[in-house]
Every structure is written in structure tokens, then in C-alpha cells.
Length: 174
Image: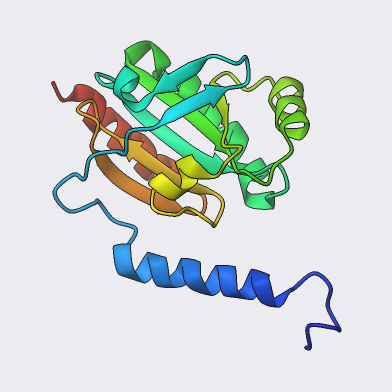
């Protein structure tokens, strides 16, 4: 199939996917070696308030990079919401970071109409995605321990049982 034959598949999209696959093979999907520190970031939330990476110390945090136009992202949102609701009273936090190309009005509408229970941030400049490993593929999700170290990175939707087991293990740690 040629690029002209399918407007849904562009050369740029294929290059983005290919670079993401290269990133996956370079860094892997398993636990980060040595518990790499989460990058210092300032998240601008939908209500205009800010939250920093250091504000999250002491909590197990899931940082999810997503877009309103990403089918997999939309599909996984109910799972992220139920996971957040299940563990939030135990010191678990979720931040959904909308990609820079996602119109803020769309992000706000999505969060409101689906009543997302966790914090949603806008990455208008792309700086947050860049700092977290030059995230380009969505969904990309990081699980961060109470000390602020990245424990796991997921590209695509995490397997829920394994994610819950890892969250429970991290919540049990001092």
C-alpha cells in the first residue's frame, strides 16, 4: 500500500512508530535498571494549579502520557480510573499528561465528560514528554515509587493484574 493510497498511514506516522520501537528495544519495558530518578517536572493541571515531581515523593505515582485522539489511550482510561480509585487511599497518585498536540479544550472536555478522578495535566510545550524520555508514542506510562524512582515503563496498555501486583508491592514498601 502506498502513502497516497491510504491517508490514514503517513510516512511520518510510520517513522514515529519505528523510532518508538527502537526506543523500546533500547530501554526495554521492564523495570528500569537501578531505579532511575523521575525527571524534575512541573505539571500544569487543568484547573491551572501546578504539581511537581518532588511534590509526589512519598506516594506511588503513575504518570500516563496520552492523547484524546489515541484509541488505546481512550480504551485504557476506565482501567486507570478504577486503579486510581482502588489505591488512592493508600498513597497512590495518577497524573494523566496530555500530549502537546492535544487541544486543551478537547482534554478538558474528555476529563469532564468521563469524570476522570485523577489529576490531568497539559504539556503545551512538549517539555514534560521530552524530559520523560522523549515520549512520542501514546499511551506511555511510568510507575514511580515513593522515593521518586521510575520502577517500570509501559508502552501501550499495561496488563492490569501485573500492574496491580506491582502497585501493591510498592505501596507496602517504606
